Length: 603
Image 1 (cartoon, rainbow, N blue to C red):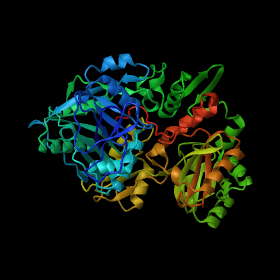
Image 2 (image 1 turned 30 degrees about the horizontal axis):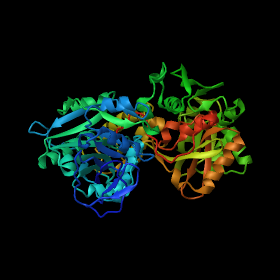
Image 3 (image 1 turned 45 degrees about the vertical axis):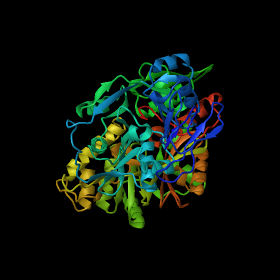
Image 4 (image 1 turned 90 degrees about the vertical axis):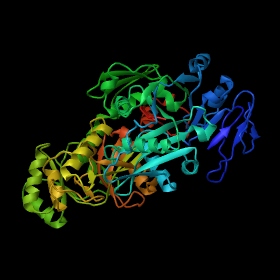
């Protein structure tokens, strides 16, 4: 939606598709009704474009920089406004350094001429316009998974039906939206005398988008803008995003001396806060998210051991040492209760919670009798993490013996447990309150009718590693070969286009599994049971693993408890913020409803 205004901000209004109603906001914030025709005045048009996640403020259309400040001050909570093309932006920022900052990004321009490569064709990938609310919801899902600010569905849909926006999505062979890009036609927005355009929010699903999705979206947008006769398209990219910069330069983008101005708000804090402590860059994502949340509260962060993820957090006279989400507030007793799965089962069962039937393996006839009684079991080390040594779906005596021996490589004590099927649910409980819930799914690949299953696994493994800082990869081991063979394939086979093939039995994130937020869908009975479990274990921070038919239904069974859950796996839920609330309650800010954006989110 576009807005021509004398000062202040665009306010959302009800308008029919393709014809957004405009409002002006006067200097005092009171609405001033404007007509549908474009308003002209002596000092400029003051063009502001509502993108849903925030507003684009076209600085070259403002007659007075002071009015740009008025607009940015009216930024809605949870939004990220961007002022671009402002002449002498440093002057405005220097006058209000307490409110504004220069975005640490670079502007690149692609001249739309015959030198631009044609749209890329990727097997099994279709680039098309955003069509409806389902598409918009999928776009928001991708935004959230990349730590970007989401937008109201109706705004995305309404904008896509105007000539001002070219909102494209990438659709996989399985019919899933896996990427998105937004183009803004400056001529349609404000009769741009330079005949230009800009692109925003180029991003892809880190779990499912095939390689080349981003390039395909970008080139398709460039082709459509060329058809409209536009002269160039600009984009803004963080100066340290070396991978994206290499892509843009390879496609013919050139640097242009243009700066963006943003308001100092909670979403933008990563962009203007002081430099990070020594050792920060060596932290893994699970420790880094804790450091980020602490620094946002002006809590001093010292990196004790980056490889171990150990931090010292200091605020006033209070000091707390953490290792990722494990802190000094978790007692050694509580930690030991989670460390041994047999003890976890006993404590949860004593608290009236449902756990699978199980026994400690002895290697004797009692193990075989238990297998015969249950029919199908899971064998796992009594102590361990990251899914090491676990065998799922054991049915035969020989299989049981082999599984027990494999588990003993990781721990001398082995647990044989009743097998339950269903969704693998992780619930994070902090200070005995449910903060996040997510369904974890085993690693899978989608066929394109061209590449072998082995190649698809290799490519998906690279994507998962890139998306998780190297934490998640799909092993090409005997388990992967067995799962593929059980589905009737060999690794050398070409998977038909659009077919989804699971290549691991368990949903462990370290072996390529993916995680999908279901916090808003969690059944109240499951949430209550998880709170009961955390209190029974007397642990202030825990990740509880359950099997459920669906997160929306009350049925569940507890599998284990983790004393050091990976909080970075649950964005956009405020897991790190609630963790810092627990450690430093005096720094807790009044709760505001906004969607946090992390490092590297581009708007």
